[in-house]
Amino acid sequence: MPTDLEGGPLARLRRGHEELVLSLLRTHGPLSRAELTRLSGLSRTTLYAIVGDLVARGALVGAAPPAEGRRRGRPVETLSLDPAAGQALGIDFARRAVHVAAVNVAHEVVGTASAAHGAEVTWAERLDLATRLVGELPGGGVRLASLSGVGVGVVGPAGAVGRAGPAPHLTPVTELLRQRFGAPVLLDTNTRLAALAEATWGAAAGVPDVAYLRLSYGVGGGLVVAGNLHRGRGGLAGEFGHITVEEDGAPCSCGKRGCLESAASLGAVLDAYPPAGDLAGLLAALPDEPAAVRAVALAGERAGRVLAAVCQALAPSAVVLGGELAATGEPLFGAVRRALDAHLMPAGRPAPDVRPALLGDAGGALGALALVLRESPPPTGPAVPVPDPTAVRRPAAAARPQGATVPVPSRGRPSWP
Image (cartoon, rainbow, N blue to C red; front, side, top):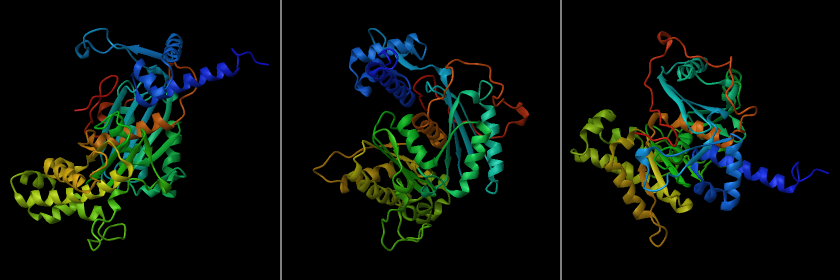
């Protein structure tokens, strides 16, 4: 019969506590002991004992805040997983660009890169472009031996992706990525992943319940509930763009009429104010041209009505607005806030905080990283760096694809411009 030290109930309980602490740090990044105590529900004595043992074994590392950010008194140490214990890779296959990002399990960003491509580029060419971008990341690229997973964002519809797996046309892509990088592949829609990114590192970092709405030429969204991405039946959660706002409205690409996408997209706003011509023209007309302000405000009012229904049902603490139309600023955000105030139950909870998205084009790739950190199993093997002959090497400078580089956060909890 095993002793308690070998495998008895107390040893199993302690291992469970250790796994809980490691999981929290893997999901949230660096945390103080007080934050770990609150999130884990463990007593202070138990938590400190678990953390002390993990630090002594080298599984956790501690760091004091930088001098410029310290308050008076003793600095609060934050704890994180050993950065050498593993990495995650995120790839966003947007409509006309590929974005990649990589982090280690301590939530330190290895690097990000991005490159545009034409509309007719094949999947094989997009995969090659993603591989080249991964090879451009700092430090010689991603160490495949320590890669715990690859998160992938794709353009909707959301029903193409769910817990049952990707749509049939994406299965070969998933398999090729698994073969190329030698790690599990998690796939979801890039709009929903952007929601997870904003709740992890962006405008709603640390907020457990978030509704995200992306207003572009298409309209989509995502829900983060209790800190986790909510997919719903068939992977259809967050399809706010196909909620009806006008019974006899314009036809929508989904086959219905009067959807939010046909009534509040960037295209709908430009149709309502033809002199703008494009987003740049619309922004130039604001806030001085009343007709441009009315067109944007009407889109905001329609979006606000849909968000009011979502908020009445789910009560998120924050609403994040992203996409090109969010660049219009107060004409849009003010209309959304007024609609929320008008349509939420007066005697109920206060309206959620409405915030602009912060992560821009990087959102899908960063959300893919957050998905890996939350849902993929941790890497097996030693938690120490070893030479890796299979690493994706950085190509010569002349071979690098052209494209903008998205922001790289600093060590620890990322800060974004």
